[in-house]
Length: 314
Image (cartoon, rainbow, N blue to C red; front, side):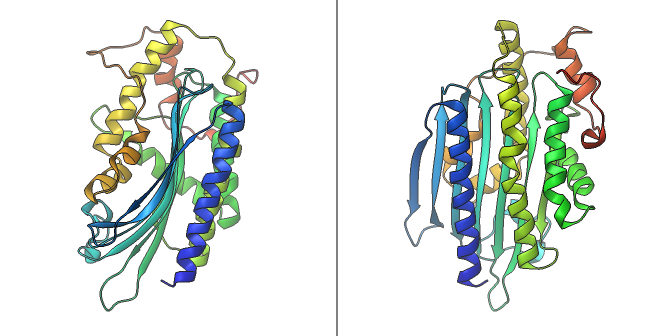
């Protein structure tokens, strides 16, 4: 892979991170801290990054939007499980990863990631692929929000082919699924990995479309919900459901596993963890409550992008 291509992707990702931070700061009213870091040459992992983090903000209890660009001697197992022929190859990887945990339980948690990988086998051409996506994790479901988020995802992928949204939506539904709980983490969105269709320029263009769609997909939901009144009951349920988020990230998430297996920066990798979490033994919500409706109406695959809301005022 040429230095020009590497620099193009890096420039885009840093610009995306900055645009997202500007948008989030304008909404929250408090600044994100900046924590730049660099790995010394010659170690297990080389490279640099920029962690942008907010804690106890006006809207966001905790959130981060991180850029990293690393090079390593050997691809970790999480990156080669679908490409065993690349095991042992040096690699280069860069991406922007974002997770936001709002104070208000009526505002959903959101995750977004866009990334590029390049395996660099000795005496062979580089193998380059892209990945990413975004998904929504509500605590209290609103059809209007789910439809807006999925329609934004569909619109982002539309210029690259109508086949992508249904394919990437299903991929997301299947990926963000807690097998030990037999339930999805949230209402999904889109997810793709090992993507190189059409060559470098086409695959890079699709990744850019996904990254560019994040702010218009999420900010209108925050603006609509952050003023809703809530109490201890809602916060308690939010903390309980956040436990599912922690379980997924530590047990299943390939990005978390890749970071830890490759010797990445732990503080940046685990910035996705929510600040307040609770677990209960064998708890079930009371039938007919808003908490129960999250399970019956939202935590199941639905064709959100093409449904008509039954309660438009919500």
